[in-house]
Amino acid sequence: MASRATAHRDNATQVPHPAELVSQEPYFRGRHGAAYLGDSLTLLRSLPADRLNLVVTSPPYALHFKKEYGNKEKKEYIDWFLPFAREIFRTLRDDGSFVLNIGGSYNQGTPTRSVYHFKLLIALVEEIGFHLAQECFWYNPAKMPMPAEWVTVRRIRIRDSVEYVWWLSKTPWPKASNLAVLKEYSEDMIRGNRNGVRGTVRPSGHVIRSSFDKLSPGGSIPSNVTEGELTNWPESMLKMGNNAANDVYTKLCKDQGIKIHPARFPAALPRFFVKLLTDEHDLVLDPFAGSNTTGAVAEGLRRRWIAVEAVEEYLKASTFRFEDRRRTHSAHQEGLFD
Ligand SMILES: C[S@@+](CC[C@H](N)C(=O)[O-])C[C@H]1O[C@@H](n2cnc3c(N)ncnc32)[C@H](O)[C@@H]1O
Image 1 (tube, rainbow, N blue to C red):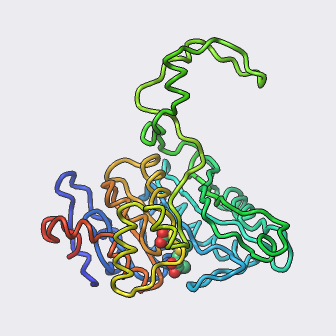
Image 2 (image 1 turned 180 degrees about the horizontal axis):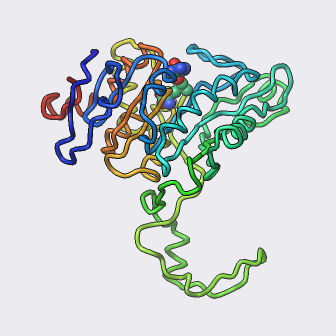
Protein backbone atom coordinates (compact mmCIF):
# COMPACT_ATOMS: atom_id res chain seq x y z
CA MET A 1 0.00 0.00 0.00
CA ALA A 2 2.83 2.41 0.78
CA SER A 3 3.82 4.51 -2.19
CA ARG A 4 6.38 7.12 -3.05
CA ALA A 5 5.74 10.82 -2.71
CA THR A 6 6.53 11.50 -6.31
CA ALA A 7 5.91 14.90 -7.80
CA HIS A 8 2.36 14.97 -9.08
CA ARG A 9 0.36 18.02 -10.06
CA ASP A 10 -3.29 18.38 -10.64
CA ASN A 11 -3.28 18.96 -14.38
CA ALA A 12 -6.36 21.15 -14.31
CA THR A 13 -4.94 23.76 -11.96
CA GLN A 14 -1.22 23.11 -11.58
CA VAL A 15 -1.48 23.26 -7.81
CA PRO A 16 1.06 20.99 -6.11
CA HIS A 17 -0.16 17.69 -4.72
CA PRO A 18 -0.02 17.85 -0.89
CA ALA A 19 2.46 14.97 -0.82
CA GLU A 20 5.00 17.47 -2.11
CA LEU A 21 4.78 19.35 1.18
CA VAL A 22 5.59 16.32 3.33
CA SER A 23 8.97 14.63 3.44
CA GLN A 24 7.51 11.38 4.86
CA GLU A 25 6.30 8.61 2.53
CA PRO A 26 2.49 8.55 2.30
CA TYR A 27 0.66 5.40 3.32
CA PHE A 28 -1.61 5.98 0.35
CA ARG A 29 -2.46 8.79 -1.99
CA GLY A 30 -5.68 10.03 -3.46
CA ARG A 31 -5.97 12.26 -6.49
CA HIS A 32 -6.10 15.36 -4.29
CA GLY A 33 -4.40 14.23 -1.10
CA ALA A 34 -2.30 11.81 0.90
CA ALA A 35 -2.68 9.82 4.10
CA TYR A 36 0.23 9.29 6.49
CA LEU A 37 0.82 6.71 9.18
CA GLY A 38 2.42 8.09 12.32
CA ASP A 39 2.38 10.84 14.90
CA SER A 40 0.71 13.97 13.58
CA LEU A 41 2.76 16.22 15.86
CA THR A 42 5.93 15.08 14.08
CA LEU A 43 4.33 15.58 10.67
CA LEU A 44 2.91 18.99 11.60
CA ARG A 45 6.35 20.14 12.76
CA SER A 46 7.77 19.26 9.34
CA LEU A 47 5.20 21.32 7.42
CA PRO A 48 6.01 24.82 6.19
CA ALA A 49 4.21 27.74 7.85
CA ASP A 50 1.08 29.45 6.48
CA ARG A 51 -0.03 26.67 4.11
CA LEU A 52 -3.27 25.16 5.40
CA ASN A 53 -6.70 26.60 4.67
CA LEU A 54 -8.53 24.38 7.13
CA VAL A 55 -7.82 21.87 9.88
CA VAL A 56 -10.89 19.85 10.74
CA THR A 57 -10.51 17.08 13.25
CA SER A 58 -11.79 15.08 16.16
CA PRO A 59 -8.96 14.14 18.52
CA PRO A 60 -9.28 11.46 21.18
CA TYR A 61 -11.44 13.07 23.88
CA ALA A 62 -10.66 12.95 27.60
CA LEU A 63 -13.21 10.19 28.11
CA HIS A 64 -14.13 8.47 31.30
CA PHE A 65 -14.73 5.24 29.36
CA LYS A 66 -11.63 4.86 27.22
CA LYS A 67 -11.69 3.87 23.55
CA GLU A 68 -9.29 1.22 22.31
CA TYR A 69 -6.97 3.80 20.68
CA GLY A 70 -6.39 5.39 24.08
CA ASN A 71 -7.69 8.62 25.58
CA LYS A 72 -5.86 11.16 27.68
CA GLU A 73 -6.79 11.89 31.27
CA LYS A 74 -8.70 15.12 31.75
CA LYS A 75 -6.02 16.63 33.97
CA GLU A 76 -3.32 16.15 31.35
CA TYR A 77 -5.47 16.88 28.32
CA ILE A 78 -4.59 20.52 27.73
CA ASP A 79 -0.85 19.92 28.16
CA TRP A 80 -1.12 17.07 25.67
CA PHE A 81 -3.14 19.03 23.11
CA LEU A 82 -1.46 22.44 23.08
CA PRO A 83 1.69 21.37 21.18
CA PHE A 84 -0.58 20.16 18.34
CA ALA A 85 -2.55 23.42 18.51
CA ARG A 86 0.63 25.48 18.33
CA GLU A 87 1.67 23.71 15.12
CA ILE A 88 -1.82 24.01 13.66
CA PHE A 89 -1.72 27.77 14.30
CA ARG A 90 1.71 28.04 12.67
CA THR A 91 0.79 26.06 9.57
CA LEU A 92 -2.60 27.73 8.95
CA ARG A 93 -2.87 30.61 6.54
CA ASP A 94 -3.98 33.93 8.00
CA ASP A 95 -7.50 33.37 6.66
CA GLY A 96 -7.52 29.71 7.75
CA SER A 97 -9.78 27.96 10.24
CA PHE A 98 -9.37 25.21 12.81
CA VAL A 99 -12.57 23.24 13.41
CA LEU A 100 -12.30 21.09 16.51
CA ASN A 101 -14.94 18.49 17.33
CA ILE A 102 -14.73 17.59 20.99
CA GLY A 103 -17.12 15.72 23.24
CA GLY A 104 -18.01 16.48 26.82
CA SER A 105 -17.36 14.03 29.62
CA TYR A 106 -18.50 13.17 33.14
CA ASN A 107 -16.29 13.47 36.18
CA GLN A 108 -15.34 10.13 37.66
CA GLY A 109 -17.67 8.89 40.40
CA THR A 110 -20.12 11.81 40.45
CA PRO A 111 -23.04 12.83 38.22
CA THR A 112 -21.28 16.08 37.28
CA ARG A 113 -19.74 17.17 34.03
CA SER A 114 -16.12 17.96 33.43
CA VAL A 115 -15.26 21.39 32.06
CA TYR A 116 -12.06 20.20 30.38
CA HIS A 117 -13.27 21.12 26.89
CA PHE A 118 -14.14 24.66 28.00
CA LYS A 119 -10.70 24.99 29.62
CA LEU A 120 -9.17 23.78 26.37
CA LEU A 121 -11.11 26.38 24.40
CA ILE A 122 -9.89 29.13 26.70
CA ALA A 123 -6.29 27.91 26.40
CA LEU A 124 -6.56 27.79 22.60
CA VAL A 125 -7.69 31.40 22.55
CA GLU A 126 -5.63 32.87 25.38
CA GLU A 127 -2.40 30.84 25.11
CA ILE A 128 -2.17 29.98 21.42
CA GLY A 129 -3.85 33.05 19.94
CA PHE A 130 -6.81 31.53 18.10
CA HIS A 131 -10.02 33.53 17.74
CA LEU A 132 -13.36 31.88 18.41
CA ALA A 133 -15.17 32.44 15.13
CA GLN A 134 -18.25 30.58 16.33
CA GLU A 135 -19.18 27.79 18.68
CA CYS A 136 -21.11 25.11 16.83
CA PHE A 137 -22.79 21.87 17.84
CA TRP A 138 -23.22 18.48 16.30
CA TYR A 139 -26.64 17.09 17.15
CA ASN A 140 -26.46 13.33 17.38
CA PRO A 141 -29.74 12.00 18.79
CA ALA A 142 -28.44 8.43 18.74
CA LYS A 143 -25.64 8.90 21.27
CA MET A 144 -25.79 6.15 23.86
CA PRO A 145 -27.55 7.07 27.14
CA MET A 146 -24.34 7.13 29.18
CA PRO A 147 -23.17 6.86 31.90
CA ALA A 148 -25.78 4.14 32.54
CA GLU A 149 -25.42 4.63 36.30
CA TRP A 150 -26.80 8.18 36.13
CA VAL A 151 -29.03 8.02 33.06
CA THR A 152 -30.70 4.61 32.86
CA VAL A 153 -30.19 3.11 36.36
CA ARG A 154 -30.62 5.94 38.86
CA ARG A 155 -32.41 8.15 36.30
CA ILE A 156 -30.96 11.37 37.65
CA ARG A 157 -29.45 12.70 34.42
CA ILE A 158 -30.77 13.08 30.89
CA ARG A 159 -29.39 11.85 27.59
CA ASP A 160 -26.50 13.81 26.11
CA SER A 161 -27.13 14.43 22.39
CA VAL A 162 -24.65 17.09 21.33
CA GLU A 163 -20.97 17.40 20.79
CA TYR A 164 -19.09 20.66 20.69
CA VAL A 165 -17.51 21.94 17.52
CA TRP A 166 -15.24 24.91 18.18
CA TRP A 167 -14.72 26.90 14.99
CA LEU A 168 -11.47 28.76 15.62
CA SER A 169 -9.56 31.03 13.29
CA LYS A 170 -6.04 32.39 13.06
CA THR A 171 -7.27 35.97 12.59
CA PRO A 172 -10.70 37.51 13.19
CA TRP A 173 -11.38 37.30 9.44
CA PRO A 174 -11.26 33.66 8.29
CA LYS A 175 -12.38 32.91 4.76
CA ALA A 176 -16.01 31.76 4.98
CA SER A 177 -19.18 31.87 2.92
CA ASN A 178 -22.51 30.66 4.21
CA LEU A 179 -23.74 30.81 0.60
CA ALA A 180 -21.84 27.54 0.10
CA VAL A 181 -23.95 25.70 2.70
CA LEU A 182 -27.46 27.07 2.16
CA LYS A 183 -30.31 24.76 3.10
CA GLU A 184 -33.65 24.28 1.44
CA TYR A 185 -36.27 26.75 2.59
CA SER A 186 -38.74 25.40 5.14
CA GLU A 187 -42.44 25.15 4.29
CA ASP A 188 -43.08 28.05 6.69
CA MET A 189 -40.61 30.29 4.89
CA ILE A 190 -42.06 29.46 1.49
CA ARG A 191 -45.60 30.08 2.80
CA GLY A 192 -44.49 33.38 4.37
CA ASN A 193 -42.97 34.43 1.10
CA ARG A 194 -46.10 33.47 -0.86
CA ASN A 195 -48.54 35.20 1.51
CA GLY A 196 -46.33 38.15 2.38
CA VAL A 197 -45.06 39.15 5.82
CA ARG A 198 -46.56 42.15 7.62
CA GLY A 199 -44.14 44.59 9.20
CA THR A 200 -44.17 44.21 12.96
CA VAL A 201 -42.07 44.56 16.09
CA ARG A 202 -41.45 41.26 17.85
CA PRO A 203 -41.71 41.07 21.69
CA SER A 204 -37.92 40.73 21.62
CA GLY A 205 -37.74 44.18 20.06
CA HIS A 206 -36.63 42.94 16.63
CA VAL A 207 -38.19 44.96 13.85
CA ILE A 208 -39.61 42.84 11.02
CA ARG A 209 -40.01 44.90 7.89
CA SER A 210 -42.42 43.90 5.19
CA SER A 211 -39.51 43.97 2.76
CA PHE A 212 -38.36 40.79 4.51
CA ASP A 213 -40.97 38.88 2.56
CA LYS A 214 -38.77 38.12 -0.44
CA LEU A 215 -36.76 34.93 -0.27
CA SER A 216 -33.28 35.43 -1.59
CA PRO A 217 -32.33 32.88 -4.25
CA GLY A 218 -30.47 29.82 -3.12
CA GLY A 219 -31.79 28.74 0.23
CA SER A 220 -31.89 29.50 3.93
CA ILE A 221 -28.86 30.16 6.11
CA PRO A 222 -28.06 27.12 8.24
CA SER A 223 -27.76 27.31 12.01
CA ASN A 224 -24.74 26.40 14.09
CA VAL A 225 -26.23 23.00 14.90
CA THR A 226 -25.09 20.36 12.45
CA GLU A 227 -27.14 17.21 12.19
CA GLY A 228 -25.14 14.25 11.09
CA GLU A 229 -25.46 10.55 10.74
CA LEU A 230 -24.44 8.38 13.61
CA THR A 231 -21.13 7.26 14.92
CA ASN A 232 -20.32 4.67 17.55
CA TRP A 233 -23.28 2.55 16.70
CA PRO A 234 -22.91 0.68 13.45
CA GLU A 235 -26.33 -1.02 13.58
CA SER A 236 -28.07 2.32 13.79
CA MET A 237 -25.87 3.74 11.08
CA LEU A 238 -27.21 1.13 8.75
CA LYS A 239 -30.79 1.76 9.82
CA MET A 240 -30.41 5.49 9.38
CA GLY A 241 -28.81 5.09 5.94
CA ASN A 242 -25.45 6.74 5.93
CA ASN A 243 -23.72 8.68 3.21
CA ALA A 244 -22.11 6.84 0.32
CA ALA A 245 -18.54 7.04 1.62
CA ASN A 246 -19.52 5.58 4.94
CA ASP A 247 -21.65 2.88 3.35
CA VAL A 248 -18.76 1.57 1.32
CA TYR A 249 -16.42 1.80 4.29
CA THR A 250 -18.74 -0.06 6.65
CA LYS A 251 -19.64 -2.73 4.14
CA LEU A 252 -16.06 -3.45 3.12
CA CYS A 253 -14.87 -3.52 6.75
CA LYS A 254 -17.57 -6.09 7.48
CA ASP A 255 -16.92 -8.11 4.33
CA GLN A 256 -13.22 -8.29 5.07
CA GLY A 257 -13.57 -8.82 8.83
CA ILE A 258 -11.78 -5.55 9.65
CA LYS A 259 -12.76 -3.64 12.74
CA ILE A 260 -14.85 -0.55 12.02
CA HIS A 261 -13.31 2.56 13.61
CA PRO A 262 -15.08 3.03 16.97
CA ALA A 263 -15.41 6.82 16.93
CA ARG A 264 -15.99 8.16 13.44
CA PHE A 265 -17.69 11.45 12.88
CA PRO A 266 -20.38 11.59 10.20
CA ALA A 267 -19.21 12.78 6.80
CA ALA A 268 -21.85 15.51 7.09
CA LEU A 269 -19.72 17.23 9.72
CA PRO A 270 -16.46 17.76 7.80
CA ARG A 271 -18.44 18.27 4.58
CA PHE A 272 -20.31 21.22 6.10
CA PHE A 273 -17.14 22.96 7.27
CA VAL A 274 -15.09 22.15 4.17
CA LYS A 275 -17.80 23.75 2.05
CA LEU A 276 -18.25 26.71 4.42
CA LEU A 277 -14.56 27.48 4.80
CA THR A 278 -12.68 26.43 1.66
CA ASP A 279 -12.70 26.62 -2.11
CA GLU A 280 -11.73 23.94 -4.59
CA HIS A 281 -8.02 23.02 -4.42
CA ASP A 282 -7.62 24.57 -0.96
CA LEU A 283 -5.66 22.45 1.51
CA VAL A 284 -7.40 20.61 4.38
CA LEU A 285 -5.65 18.67 7.16
CA ASP A 286 -7.00 16.12 9.62
CA PRO A 287 -4.24 15.29 12.16
CA PHE A 288 -6.35 12.65 13.98
CA ALA A 289 -7.76 11.04 10.88
CA GLY A 290 -9.08 7.70 12.19
CA SER A 291 -11.01 6.22 9.26
CA ASN A 292 -10.16 9.32 7.17
CA THR A 293 -13.69 10.64 6.85
CA THR A 294 -12.20 14.09 6.28
CA GLY A 295 -9.87 12.97 3.49
CA ALA A 296 -12.68 11.18 1.67
CA VAL A 297 -14.96 14.22 1.94
CA ALA A 298 -12.18 16.53 0.74
CA GLU A 299 -11.39 14.22 -2.16
CA GLY A 300 -15.04 14.27 -3.25
CA LEU A 301 -15.16 18.08 -3.02
CA ARG A 302 -11.87 18.48 -4.93
CA ARG A 303 -10.04 20.01 -1.99
CA ARG A 304 -6.44 18.96 -1.44
CA TRP A 305 -6.00 17.03 1.80
CA ILE A 306 -3.50 15.56 4.25
CA ALA A 307 -4.60 12.95 6.79
CA VAL A 308 -2.48 11.56 9.63
CA GLU A 309 -3.38 8.55 11.76
CA ALA A 310 -1.29 6.70 14.34
CA VAL A 311 -2.96 3.26 14.04
CA GLU A 312 -2.21 1.33 10.87
CA GLU A 313 -5.36 -0.80 11.02
CA TYR A 314 -7.54 2.33 10.84
CA LEU A 315 -5.59 3.84 8.00
CA LYS A 316 -5.60 0.62 6.03
CA ALA A 317 -9.38 0.31 6.32
CA SER A 318 -9.75 3.99 5.41
CA THR A 319 -8.70 3.13 1.85
CA PHE A 320 -12.19 1.56 1.55
CA ARG A 321 -13.61 5.08 1.53
CA PHE A 322 -11.98 5.51 -1.85
CA GLU A 323 -13.28 2.18 -3.15
CA ASP A 324 -16.38 3.46 -4.89
CA ARG A 325 -14.23 5.78 -6.98
CA ARG A 326 -11.84 2.94 -7.60
CA ARG A 327 -14.63 0.76 -8.90
CA THR A 328 -16.22 3.33 -11.16
CA HIS A 329 -12.97 4.54 -12.71
CA SER A 330 -9.82 2.62 -13.26
CA ALA A 331 -7.09 3.41 -10.75
CA HIS A 332 -5.01 4.67 -13.65
CA GLN A 333 -7.63 7.13 -14.88
CA GLU A 334 -8.61 8.34 -11.45
CA GLY A 335 -5.12 8.30 -9.98
CA LEU A 336 -6.45 7.18 -6.62
CA PHE A 337 -3.56 4.95 -5.76
CA ASP A 338 -0.07 4.89 -7.12
C1 LIG B 1 -11.82 10.29 17.50
S1 LIG B 1 -10.75 9.42 16.44
C2 LIG B 1 -10.99 10.25 14.88
C3 LIG B 1 -12.06 9.61 14.04
C4 LIG B 1 -12.24 10.27 12.69
N1 LIG B 1 -12.79 11.61 12.81
C5 LIG B 1 -13.14 9.42 11.81
O1 LIG B 1 -14.18 9.93 11.34
O2 LIG B 1 -12.82 8.25 11.59
C6 LIG B 1 -9.15 9.98 16.92
C7 LIG B 1 -8.01 9.26 16.21
O3 LIG B 1 -6.79 9.93 16.52
C8 LIG B 1 -5.75 8.96 16.47
N2 LIG B 1 -4.57 9.54 17.13
C9 LIG B 1 -4.35 9.74 18.46
N3 LIG B 1 -3.17 10.35 18.66
C10 LIG B 1 -2.61 10.56 17.42
C11 LIG B 1 -1.39 11.17 16.99
N4 LIG B 1 -0.50 11.69 17.84
N5 LIG B 1 -1.16 11.20 15.64
C12 LIG B 1 -2.04 10.70 14.76
N6 LIG B 1 -3.21 10.11 15.13
C13 LIG B 1 -3.49 10.05 16.45
C14 LIG B 1 -6.37 7.75 17.14
O4 LIG B 1 -5.69 6.55 16.78
C15 LIG B 1 -7.81 7.81 16.62
O5 LIG B 1 -8.00 6.97 15.51
